[in-house]
Structure formats: C-alpha cells, structure tokens
Length: 199
Image 1: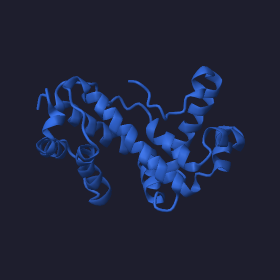
Image 2 (image 1 turned 45 degrees about the horizontal axis):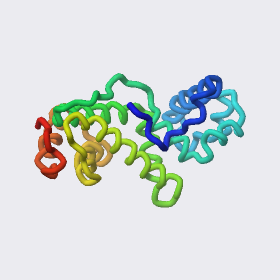
Image 3 (image 1 turned 90 degrees about the vertical axis):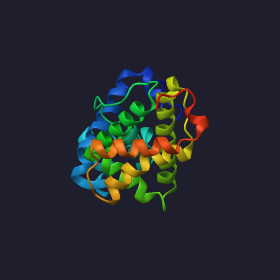
Image 4 (image 1 turned 180 degrees about the horizontal axis):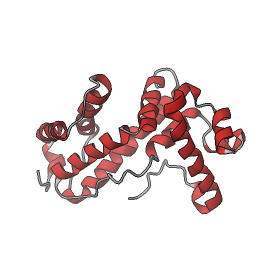
C-alpha cells in the first residue's frame, strides 16, 4: 500500500538510521504500558534504547510526534485487510484490524494519551487529526476495487461504535458486534459512495 504523504521519509535511504528508529519505537512500545505516557520520558527512552536524547528529538521533536508514529507504525499483527470489491467484507476486516490494533497495550495507551491531550496540546491535536486522515485514506484505498469512496461522516459512522464500545462502555467488541455495526453502516452510505459495490 502506498505510504501516506505525511509519514516521515528520510530514514529509508539510511538502513542504520532506520534500525535505530525501529529499535526506539519497539522499546517505547514495551515501556509505555509499564510506565504510562507520563513516565515515558526522553531521558528514560534514551537510556533504555542506548541513544542520545538529541537522537530522539531529531526523529520526534515532540512526544506527540513519537506517539503518532507508535500508533501508525505499530507492529504487524497480520490482520490488516486486503483491498476488495465486497464492501461488507472490507469494512468488517478493517474493523477487526482496528480491534486488534487497539488491543495492543502500547497502542491503546498511545491513542488514549493523544486523545486526552488534544484539548490542551496543539501537537497532540494535530497528531489526532493526522491519524484520522491517515486511517480514512487507508480505508478508501481498500475500498477502491469496489468503486467506493466514503466521506468523513461515513468513516466516523463506521469506526465510532467500535471505539465507543471499547473506551466508553468498556465492553467487548465481538465479531457479532462488528457484523451489526457494518450492517447498520451499510444502510447509511450515501448512494453515490456505493456505486458498483457488493453489499
């Protein structure tokens, strides 16, 4: 899948820098559930990753930038869906991938932290917007073979119930719940967005 434009690009030409960056992110994922967002200081991360704080600031000028990459460059759980022409199947697979992603403790903590800080921290607010844009664009890429392009509202109506169940209700997101969400969502799609789709 094509990499979103806002992802950080310069490390791809330098394998050593990329390895360092990947190691730091892996260690940050280990530390975050253990120490919490407040305890994930650059001093601690630099010590555990055996890098300087200057190295961390060069890659992630703010903690929001670090959390942004932790969310969007999470571990491959083997659950990310393939593009397809069956809108129901793609949406279902995408929600199951979302469920798997936020079940990773570091990912869950990072998402909640960025969301909580967005009201008073402009960097976190911007990161939250960019995360939404990234995931929305990725879902539209998956739906391309179906001839479907969903709007911002249609995107929110798909993922909203799952995040509400996870973070507000604190309940399980079962396969049956996802099926119900997708069935309801399909009825809300604007007729123009579902042209040529298999629903």
